[in-house]
Image 1 (cartoon, rainbow, N blue to C red):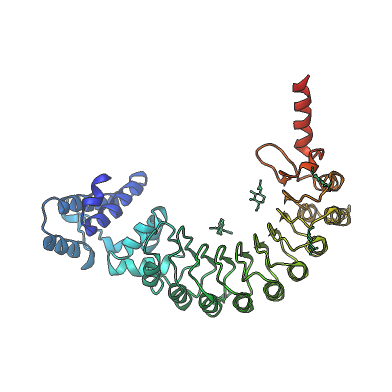
Image 2: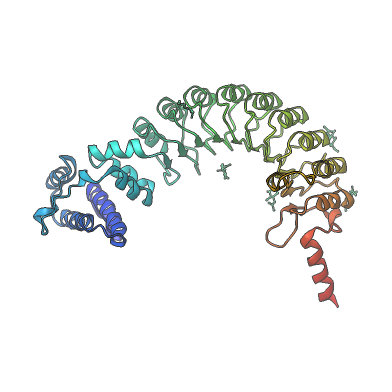
Length: 411
Ligand SMILES: *[C@@H]1O[C@H](CO)[C@@H](O)[C@H](O)[C@H]1NC(C)=O
Ligand SMILES: *[C@@H]1O[C@H](CO)[C@@H](O)[C@H](O)[C@H]1NC(C)=O
Ligand SMILES: *[C@@H]1O[C@H](CO)[C@@H](O)[C@H](O)[C@H]1NC(C)=O
Ligand SMILES: *[C@@H]1O[C@H](CO)[C@@H](O)[C@H](O)[C@H]1NC(C)=O
Ligand SMILES: *[C@@H]1O[C@H](CO)[C@@H](O)[C@H](O)[C@H]1NC(C)=O
């Protein structure tokens, strides 16, 4: 609707909410609400045609704020449904179908709605907010106190510590928080989250380069339920000392991204391997200090490991590959084990050893032979060996087919 942007904000909100109602209820059979929405839309249209702004404010208040009374009964059929009488579940269902910007506007529409929305909303993403995210979070956090998921990913850094402190002060139920690329945040944010959000299970602070390792260690001593942690590019925070704290505190950890954390060494990864036995996905790409010791510890300590990223870990040698392959042999399910545990022991499914230039074909071949799920099928590689010129003779599932296809074509 191109005319929307030229309308006063109140009318925009009405059109938005009403249009969405129309959309939703035209497919459902809920006729009385359909009429409500139609009436509302008509009102909004009238508002933008020739009303002075004082009149507009007055109409808007009359329509939405004072009781929210749009009396359809007076229109035609004798129905008396009022906006504020929309059951909360229905309202939340409507709002689950519209975008977060509309939700926030709708929360400002009338007091009854505000309460319903603020207490009912558990997931909010503000990634669309390109300029004023910090103020928006400061304004919303005290209202949306039941949030469980909050996505604040940014293209250009906007968030500051005071916004994260507001989140920690009001949103104690938070389980999933994405603060990625918040370059401006400092340790104050991590200390606040430690105290305010003990139930965090998923935290994404990738690219938050100013956090320190002691603040991260402190956070993990309070947020012990963490299952997923993204520390990609947190060079100062992800040290061996912090990894030891994670290993000690977060025993349920399943997913960890340590990409480009160049201070991570064998001591940290070995602690993780033995402290977090449920680890399923670990990305160590660009962790240039780690050696075979790290991979051997993971092979021994983490039977559920499915995905391992070793891109550019150039000190990894064949020994590491053989230890992974042998772990598989050791864990091969016996006849008496259930189908379920056999499935659980399925082993590595994704391995990125691109740019691991010290590896030789027999070692990588041994891995392929141990883990049938690893393949190099076109378009969906799960074994990434690009850039490893020495590995062109490795034949995993699809590599073999591709090789055959190539030699057939050559004839
Ligand atoms: C954290 O979760 C537990 C268990 O689900 C719950 O009892 C507790 O109230 C939650 N704490 C907060 C601060 O939400
Ligand atoms: C974390 O943030 C990064 C960067 O914005 C993104 O690529 C990634 O998908 C996010 N989620 C998780 C679970 O790591
Ligand atoms: C392998 O890992 C590197 C570093 O994380 C990444 O840039 C690359 O895209 C990965 N390769 C594939 C095919 O996933
Ligand atoms: C990693 O490899 C480089 C170059 O081969 C070597 O100088 C360095 O000592 C190795 N690091 C470790 C921790 O083994
Ligand atoms: C891998 O290939 C490069 C260049 O082709 C060679 O210099 C290097 O020695 C090879 N490495 C191994 C372990 O074979």
